[in-house]
Length: 452
View 1 (spheres, rainbow, N blue to C red):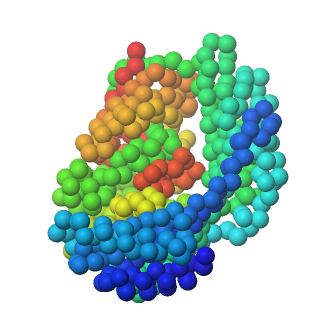
View 2 (tube, rainbow, N blue to C red):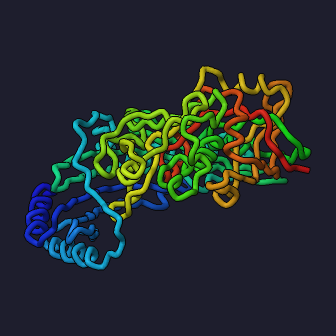
View 3 (cartoon, helix red, strand yellow):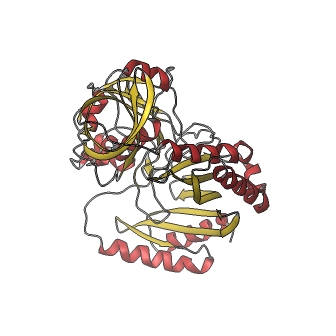
């Protein structure tokens, strides 16, 4: 049914039921995903999702209810469930609805032409990507996964305090896994494209990079244990930043789960490190005009040349700390609680190329892959011990491939050891549940490596 009509009827009935204030959060979405294997469409899915979350204050306590249906007949259920929920709440914590920001930015989150792309066009490009990877080299023995997907999401947030905002976004992604074998070992290579414009997606480039990434790992062997100068490539640096993102959350700091607690205004990284959270970047996965509480989005510098400037806040932590919310109150789903997440959260790039970093290293290592990153890292302490692979850097050049090594250290110490940052920032990495998190390649002055 019409969302405006649904909202008006829900609010009328909520008021009649005795709710003092109330809010509706609504999310509609759809996604088409096509999987290709051996030049055939192996799977084709077209999934739609919708849901509403209602919260309202009854007798001074906030109650919640949600439904995966958006229809007139669920309104009594939402109201009675939220009322019953409020009546059994025992916490004395005061929860308030947000009244809305004075103004909201215009952010490019939706490309209308993306929804006009036909299934035949998507299949054609996916087939091309797989064919390119398979024919790239005789050592490519299979392309087990080749997928293209696109989807659209619409969000509405409105409450009895005057908040009434909507946003529509869409995106597409494609990836290919290639399998290479030299008769001795078998390696996998991945390449991923994320974007908002179908015309920007080049299936030939995707297939070639996927195949080349697999081939690059053949013949890898360990290096001796020791301390090395290391270049973390953009994917690995992004992975680490994503795992330790919770340290920048005011919620985690308030619970005593952040090593950055009490360090506002202090130097927590080298002066090469500037970290930005920017929800206003055009056509990025983390871009939005407002967060899940309706707070207007704005760009913040979290770490400025190594100096820790701000935690990320939702309205609850902002009230507790006596500061303004930063627009980082985010839901992982329509019926999930509001926590704190990043938008487009990234380390600012420099003008140096990755090859410039190799030159500065001289002799060292390039790490291009971590395995089991969530199992081998502690987001609270910052400690990590991760199986890694990559390449030797010899005389300032990328040399032979390496594997079966373990990189160990502490993320917060590592930030102080960054002596150079490259210019290869790319958000086309595997999405992180904490936000759209990315980093350029980083030169680490010293990192412990366990090998042979």
